[in-house]
Length: 228
Image (cartoon, rainbow, N blue to C red):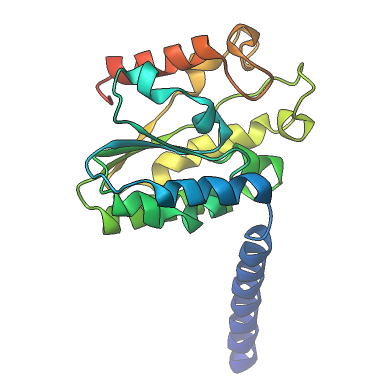
């Protein structure tokens, strides 16, 4: 009886691990915009390797930002790709590590949430991103920024707008999963909220992306708190 129980537990654990691995592979195949992702990665690879710079890394929210003008630093590197997910960032970290940046400002996860990738998978991938950068570029300080709020009153990205509970959950567990790494959690989520706890329409391009005013608030916060 004891041997049967042991066998049952072992089989259960194996099946759970197999399911998680299968799900990871499934999620790894979605979320890309081929006509945009590949040219951006090719562009990154074509640029000369210059070390010691600041890199902003993420999806369209990062790509849209004019970080050179916002920060007043013309050497800042933009590594945002519209539509990207955590799996996409993991696939292109060689470019980041090769540049041995002084700082990396990471913002990723909202597109994962829009595609119903589990919160724990998103958080674990972010931990992996930080770990890979830490290992390949030990002097780099990584700033893991919280996922921004959304506003369901807009109509542009409906697959994202009813997912606020997932945004809150991922943001809550991120500080725990990156503990012990050479990184810091930067909670920028509250900066963009209105009185109803949604993305403030006055700083929104749509219910997902922010406008120039929103980017100014973001960078001013980073500077005021010594991150930049």
